[in-house]
Amino acid sequence: MNFNWKILTAAFLFFFLFTGHSIGQDRKFVNEFLNLGIGARSQGMMGAVSASVNDITAGYWNPAGLTEIDANFQFGAMHAEWFAGIAQFDFLGFGKKLGKKNNAFAGISLIRMGVDQIPNTFNLIGPDGRINYDNVTEFSASDYALFLSYGHKLNDNFQLGGNIKILNRNIGQFGSAWGFGFDLGSKFIFGNFQLGIVARDIPSTFTSWSFNYTQEEKEILFATGNEIPKSTTEVALPQVIVGISYSGGAKQGKNGFHYLAEFDINISNNSTVYKLIQTETVDVSPAFGVELGYNHLAYVRAGVGNLQNLSDVPGEISGFNIQPNIGLGLALGRFKIDYALANVGHIGIAEFSHIFSLQMDLKSGGR
Image 1 (spheres, rainbow, N blue to C red):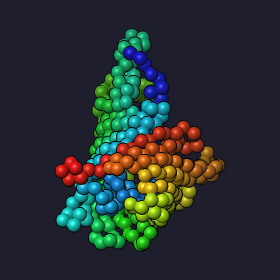
Image 2 (cartoon, one colour; image 1 turned 180 degrees about the vertical axis):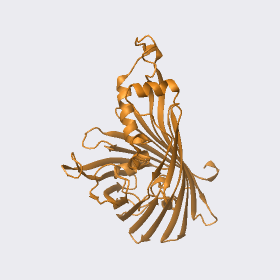
Image 3 (cartoon, rainbow, N blue to C red; image 1 turned 90 degrees about the horizontal axis):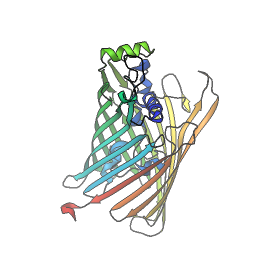
Image 4 (cartoon, rainbow, N blue to C red; image 1 turned 90 degrees about the vertical axis):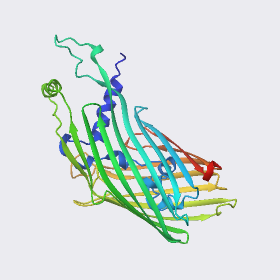
């Protein structure tokens, strides 16, 4: 077989950044793939969309925003590749308008983050001590999240929404985990201003891991100085995101320029690095995004976030990081195509990811 050491190296990076299972028992690396964000439009604005999101991706960002979808049905998809195409990040979503007054919307979303074709080198060295590449097989490390979302418009100025999310994470045949959690979201509208408040992982999201190593595999791990993973339960602590947006310019159906700007603050205790504001109990991470459109047809977007104090020595700040993202969008009738150039997950490294999204509105009866 074609043994790819590049994939093996990326797999180790993937494990440490995204799987966050029992290694080290560090709960600050819990379900990191759910902190990455979905949708090229949102990524182009650096995820600063909790107050303004109004499409099928609201199931992730703020389920209250689902109520602003005009179509009877809406479908959305996203694809991104990281680590030179080794890691795949995908999203599929579908939703339907509900209620006699069309004041509710229900959606289902599936998110996958995975590295495929990872070499399994447990049997690389045979009983006689010889290296045999024919004994190397492959496996995948994948994280899945299923969101069941509902949004309800109570009046023209107030909307509520919530998620039930089911998580499945696996590392080939070696280990798997199941998790369960809830999110709540709200939106308040004051003229051109919108306020979004989202509570994620309330009261906490629990994910339970179990592992299935053979006795021979355990002996290999022990002989090579590796820790043998044990079954454990991770706890993702609650996060609160508060966003405020302002929009202006040409109204829907009118020609001309229109714009939107939003500022979000993420308050949590789940940081993996030094955030801009960090105490023993709270981390604060801001993000800012803007969108400029013309005739509600073409869009240009930009955002900054991931503002972090960097540290080479614990307790000492040695530098500062800021991440810019940019994006483009095109609306063609019932279809919307979005693109973002992002540096997600690469602190201080100019290795960008290309993110593509497609959105389609459907009418009743397929018209």
